[in-house]
Image (cartoon, rainbow, N blue to C red; front, side, top):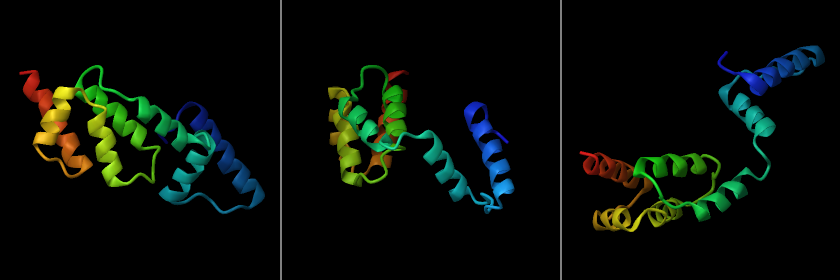
Length: 124
């Protein structure tokens, strides 16, 4: 078990309650993931992430921006790929936006990889 704190306590309680009540066990990754999300994520996590995404701007390193952006995207499941790409590039500093547009990025994974290489290029 790699769970700690509240998650570990919740898991142990749930397993004991399931066994006592005769409920089916959580025996797949999908069931566990759903259970954890239902327990620990606010019901409006997607809306909160979208609000934070609207305000997200690159103020530090590109790598820090990528980390924050991808973290927010984990809570937003139904955004189109084009909107993801647009939001990613729009939040970056002007020089980074210009470079990614010059490279004609077509999808988010490619844009993230290209942006990450800018960090390496600029820090050498």
